[in-house]
Each structure stands twice: as C-alpha cells, then as structure tokens.
Length: 435
Ligand SMILES: [Zn+2]
Image (cartoon, rainbow, N blue to C red; front, top):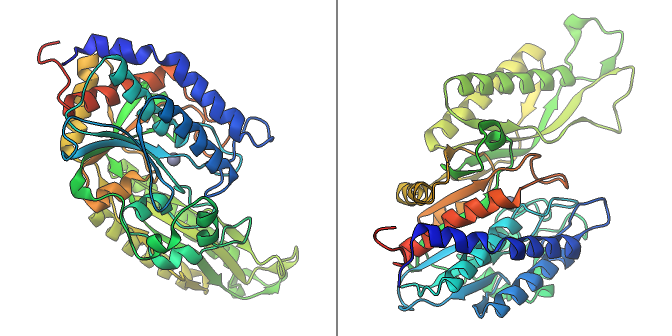
C-alpha cells in the first residue's frame, strides 16, 4: 500500500499533542531545578531517565528494541525484507548541564513521531526503519566527542574509556558500566552498526544559531557537518614585568593573545566575504591566576582554539593561516606561542542524493526550505565518516542551544518531521506514484 503527500502530512500533524507531551515528560523528568534547564548527563542519571522514557514510548508503539554494547537504543519498525539495507534516523538524548530540552531529544522524538505516522497510515515499509537514541554526544562531560555513535561503529579509541567525567572524576568505563554497557566489547571495537547495512541516515536537530530565524524559514536541509582542528592548550609566553616598564621593552602576553584573537577574527571576516563558511572559537582565554596582578605586565596567557570548516582543503588552508598568524604575532610582540597538543575531526559532507530527496520531499509537501551550513558537530558525522549516506534536517530555533532558553515551535518541528516521514516512506516504497 502507498500513500499521497496530503494524507502523510495530516498523519504527522495529528501527532502534535503526543509530540508536545513527550517533550514535556522529558523536560519534567530531567529538569535540574535551575529555572527551566535540563541536565541529561552523559552515562548518568539524566541521560538514563530520558532513555527510559523513550524506551517506554517505543515499547507501547510495538517497536523492536535493541540496546547495544554501548547502551545505545535502537527502536525498529520491521520491514517486509529484514535483510534489505535499513533506513535510520535519530539523535542523542544527553545534554550539557543546565541545557535546553530540544538539543538532541528533538531528533529522537522526531523518529518516533515519524514511525507512529507510518503506523497510523497502515504502511508496511519494504525495509526496516530504525530510530536511534544515541548515548554521549555532548563532549562537555568526558571531553571526548561522539562516544555513543563511535562505539556503535566500533570506532571509539580504547583510551577514551579512561577519560574522567569532569564533575564526578570517574572514568567513562565506570559510567558506561553503571548504565549496563559491555565495556569490554567497546574496548575491542565491536560494532552494532555497519555502513553496508544502512541505506541512509537522516538526523533532525534544532539549529544552534538564528540563521533560519533571520531567513524567515522553519526548516532547512544541512549541507554537511564541518570538520575541525583543535588546540585545547595554547600557551603564550612573554615576560612578567613591572607596570612602569615602557612599551618598547614589553613582552606582553595579554596583548599578544589579543592580537592572535583579532587576527583570527579578521581571517573569518575575509572568508565570510568570500562565501567560504568557517568558524573559530576561543572558549578559554586567561592569565595565570596565581601570578596576575593589577600592577604586573602579564607574562603568560592560556587559551583554547577550535576551528571548523566544511571542506578538507579549506580546513588545511586555515590551519596554515593559523600557524603563520601565530608566527607573526610572536615576532611582533616578542613572545613564544606554543600551540600544544592537537586534535581533529574529518569533514562530513551530506550525501547529495539524500539532500536532493529531502528537498524533493519538502517540495511535494509544500514546505518551503533551503540548504544551510550550520557549523556545529553532530553524530551524523560518525555515520558519514563510516560511509553511510547522510543528511540533516534543521529546525528553526530562536535562542541558540546549550542553554535553557532554546526555543523551538512545535509547528516548525512537525514540518521537519513531515519531511523526514516522507523521506522514510518514499525510500521504503510507500509513497503513491501520483499524489
Ligand atoms: Zn545536539
């Protein structure tokens, strides 16, 4: 049996009350007592509670449930051919401390609402359709990214298991065990997902910037997840000196760090003007609290640097630009700039076929959309790097994310869910040839 676009749209819209109720249950369940924020700590109480709520809901829908060795949860509507490549959607359920209710959870709720819509339409997909509730996407807790999704593909480096959670001081291995994960399987690189068994992955996520608000658009199709390079521990060393030292003798670490930051911003401005999207962030920027004082020229500054872009060549150019900026600043200010250890993540462009299919789904449903570069990190990157055709759907959200004020209108959310549902139905052979 197949269905037309207006019936599909109506089936999704009919889930509005259920979607709102599920979000409210998550918010109340993981509310942290600080205003309206939620805390769904990675492999901790908050994330665990969200997993239970979502699992209860999926069980009531009659979905097949599978918890893998990393305690990721996969909820499946079985297809006619159990061996055909499956369609997957979903996102993460953890949050930052005192974060918002929608970052991550929106993608998991969307997957369940999409499957529920297919069920109410009485559709029997040709292949399995799975919604994933992924663990541990937020890197704030263990300072390790994509723990759940990389574990699912057997790609988590074993040393990550020894990372300590910033608040409890206990290792990832300990916390995973608390949540029922089989840590030894994670360590030996067991995989619960393989790229060749997945036909496509689409993650719905709130936009973490106001670009859609600015464009007056409810939803967008993501062009890809940017790659990055990171220097978590940059140290700039000049010379501590008396406040009375004339300018020409100074080797001021504060001014050198400021030059470095402003130089990076100039670079960004230039790349924006050239239409080459990137972003850089200095999340940490400080003098040594044990040494700094009102009447001292600062001899040392510490900072962190994260630089991201959407294509490999651009990213490599940016890194060489960062190096030459550091050399120029060091020379001009008479300081040493030690970039310290380096970490990086590969770029993960969206699959053009999946992007085109989502754009077409939106057109068929009469939902305006656009392509959007959104420079945040998502589990989708893990799927793409593993070789799965991927894309993302972004939902308008006024106040950014990682804060309790993030706001997503349920009507905007349902438009994105309709596009997701259409894509699932079309790929699973359940859309009527003529609407
Ligand atoms: Zn997220």
